[in-house]
Image 1: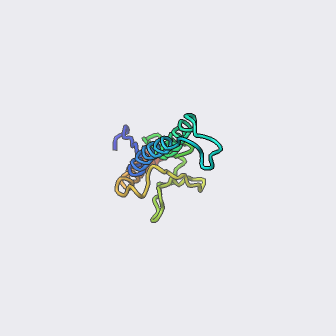
Image 2 (image 1 turned 90 degrees about the horizontal axis):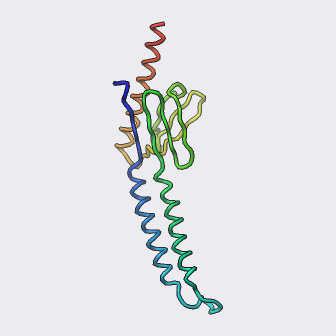
Image 3 (image 1 turned 90 degrees about the vertical axis):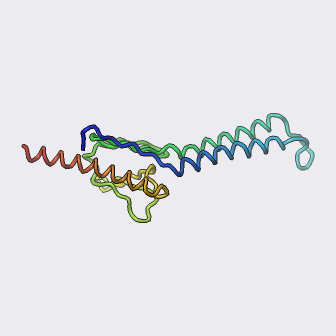
Length: 157
């Protein structure tokens, strides 16, 4: 393993679903906006142009909310691992990582830390099947290389 090896992982399936959903949301809300004309249901008011723009704006806001789920990413190299989930980002050196877990039935992989905490890595999702497995294996290789470097340093002292 070379010292310059790095890993960059992003989920695949959820990104496709989110982008398609975002487009569908904007289109549906735009179509609804075009039907907002004339009097309201009981006739006491009428739909205005601002109501149509507000409906399109709601579609855009909901689409942006759906696109938040495309945010997860994991980047790792010889120094450590950087995890960006839907909400929150973490940068950890390999010294605090005990192992990389991907338990059977778990929706995504996690970093097991020495303080007995688990840090979920939403970017490595079970729905991505082999892509997620390959990502976990690459992270484990980097972690093992770091442990081997520490063992060599301790043996050399």
